Picture 1: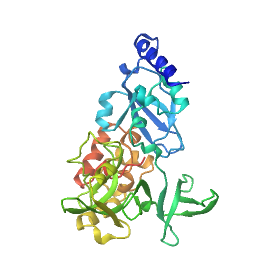
Picture 2 (picture 1 turned 30 degrees about the vertical axis):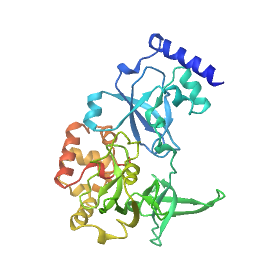
Picture 3 (picture 1 turned 45 degrees about the vertical axis):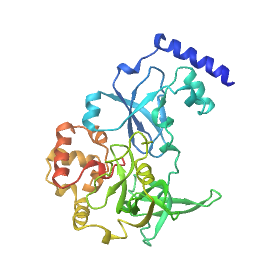
Length: 344
């Protein structure tokens, strides 16, 4: 289909879409998609009128399929504090950059997620992980697998030809995801890495790479306070990756360590925090209802708790907003928050 024909069909779509007899999702709530493989949940709402798929590729593991399995009210979504992606209609110029199947989907009234139209698409970066081998203590790299039956965490590595190389059990607490970025020396940057960052005005700092729940992407945090460094950003240039945006303002940035091998980079407060993260849930000052719900969710330590998605917990029986508020008060009293590590 040539450009002229594409433009004709696109203009017809814009002229007819508002009067077309189809579901108008702009009047509904926030849709919840859950991955069948990893359990990751993400949230969407309609910005434009159109058709959306019932299943989409998972934003987290990329190989699983996320299914629309729930719709919540905007007020509940605001209470959970989750990032909401929008279903939008591409402009004609954006349409030209899409693949043939997606173009036909759009011309038939379909919408696409706003994330897929940004310059940087987190779903297109390379997904791989690393972790410390349980037997040798060495870092191993590859695909991540959690075996629910025996609770083992494995990393699978492959040769350059695509053949299996090794499959090793790793220490779960050391598992880190590749951010898709490399430092000035060509080293891959992973979650948990400590960066030495220098700016054009001569200033410099050491930052910890971590997950920013508010923006649903990797970011840089003050390695002592564990607070996301987001102030002073030009959000007009924010393209979906907080870490990338932050480092683009730097003259140079180099990996100088990680939180597992270089404890000297952590302050006393951070070390105390690590001991809190290893605390068993049964030893926490929580109500019986909250403790039972966390046990049913398979959460045994505080460290595992802050990795959970809030909505994931709310799906368990007898776990409501009151229990969630109780847990948030507990986290706050211990200097913790959900945004430190969120993976489920």
